[in-house]
Each structure stands twice: as structure tokens, then as C-alpha cells.
Amino acid sequence: MEQILEKIDQYILADDLVERTGALVRCPSYDGVPNQETEAAECIKRMFDAEGIPCTIEHVVDGRCNVYATLKGSGGGKTLLLTGHTDTVSPDNHPRGLDPYLEDGNLVGRGTCDMKGALAGMIAALIALKRGGVALRGDVIFAGCIDEEMRSYGTIAAIEKGIRADGAVVGEPTGLQVHIAQRGLEWYEFNFQGKTVHGGRQREGINAILMANHFITKVEQELAPKVFARKHLLLTEATLNVGVIHERSIRTFAEREHLPVVHNPCPADKNTKREDVKQLLAELERRYPQLKEHIFGGLQRSPLPGWRPEAGRNSRPQDGE
Image 1 (tube, helix red, strand yellow):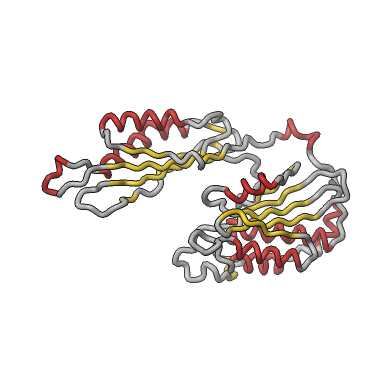
Image 2 (cartoon, rainbow, N blue to C red; image 1 turned 135 degrees about the vertical axis):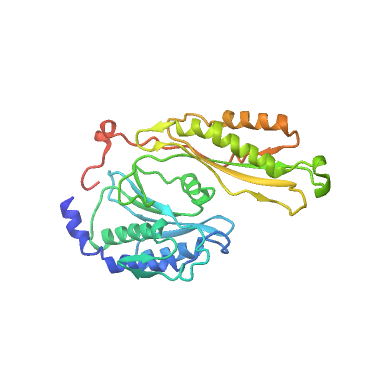
């Protein structure tokens, strides 16, 4: 391992990482941008092409593309996957969100931390291995995937493409600490249908805001304590968040409210805890027969339990693999 580090160390340069990260930040890849992540994927491909590292861009959905690169090993070794997402959240109104700059030794810009800086580091790692002439037995694969912020279409596409590895590094920001477990994701959306009436005939209407408020109160008082009680050695506890609530139409009397709720289960949760949610909804429906509820079943991601050192010593790759 020391010999490998000596070969690649001279090619890992801070200025180079800043330049590559900045180039990616300048590629807008947030929701609402046409083809969203594809410009960033093309930028990454140019970096690999310049070094003679085989790289492909592949369409996933709606003009949005993943980008893959591979350093082939000599054979007989284990495969390492370096992966991360190319999408970001919006820079909002930050005047320099897509114009990165250095401040107090830090690169500032949308996505520098989450996670174009990590992508730049992964790109630089493959390039350093290539420039240093390091001959590994196993393959090193890079996968820049779309859509982490919403439905994970990019990672699903990479899996369906057949990408497999013995180990993986996911470049999410962790304060430079190694995290070996991950909460899952359940994203529920609820519609509360009321009845619009004139403000002077209030008793004849049904206020969707009050229905939503009643549900939120029950979530906080009855469901949240159950969720937070689910502990995990590596992840502390599960989480539950009520997101934004908004009215679908402007009326004298609130007719319809839309409410997203996000649950991040710990690995100990073997099954989705939908029965808890359905019980709350049943109580609400008894009070408000007009309630309409919809759950997006597609937004479910199972938690990863984590690697336990005592169980995995014999499977860890050796030097040169």
C-alpha cells in the first residue's frame, strides 16, 4: 500500500481538486434545469477523456444522464466502486451559487460539499492511478448518478445496468468520518380534501387546513415518539419530518391541502411502519369522511445495516487488490 501511495501522491494536488470541483459547480444540475445533470456528466467525461480513461454517458430519464468510467485491473482482484450523485438542490437566490470562490481556505458554491467536491476527488483518484502507472488486480469503477435528491433513478439505473462491486465509497459529506450504515427513506404524501363555502356559512364547509393540522398533531404526539424510540448502534435513531404544507387553490375557505411527510427508518425496522400511519388516517377519516389520502409507494429505500468489523475481516481487500 505504501508503494501505491508513493506513486499517486504527486498527482493528488489541492489546486487541481479545487479546479475540478469549481468546474462541476458551474454546471447547474438542480431541479428545473433542462436535462438537469447532463451538463455535469459531460464535464466529467471531458476530464476522463483527457486522461485516456474509458468513460461513457448513458441516458436514464427525461434527458438526464449517468456517467461511468472504469480503470480495468489485471484480473483476480476485487472491484471498488466510487460513486456519488451529480444533482444538487437549488442555489436559490445566492448571487454566487454557481460561481464558486475561495473564502478562508474553503471553496464556496452550491454542491461543493454535497457532493461535487467528492466527485472531483473520485475523478482525481482514478486519474492519479492512471498517471502513476499503478497496476491493480481489481477494477476501479466511477459512477456519477442522477436524482439522489428525489427518486434515486440514477443509482437504480446503475444497478440495473449490472454494475457490481466488492466494496463501495459513497462520497456524501460526513465530516471526513467513515460512515458504514445508512437510514432508509419513506416519503408519504397526503391530500386533505375539504369543502369550499362562503366565509359567512362556515359551518356548512369543511376546512382542509384544520384536517391537516389535526393529522400533524397526531403525527407529533402519537407517531413521532414511536419512530424516535427505534434506536440503532451506528445511526442513533430513526427520524420523522413533516415537510411543507400548501393549499392547491386559493379560496375563501381552505378546500385542499397537500402535506409531505418523510420517514428515515433505521436498519432495525424490518418492515415499513405503514400500519402506524394507517391507524392515524383511519381515526381522521372517522372524523372527516372527505379525507383523501395518497401514498407514493415508489419512494421507499431500505436502510443499510452497516459492516461489522468482526464479521468482515476475512473479506477485506488486500494490498494491490
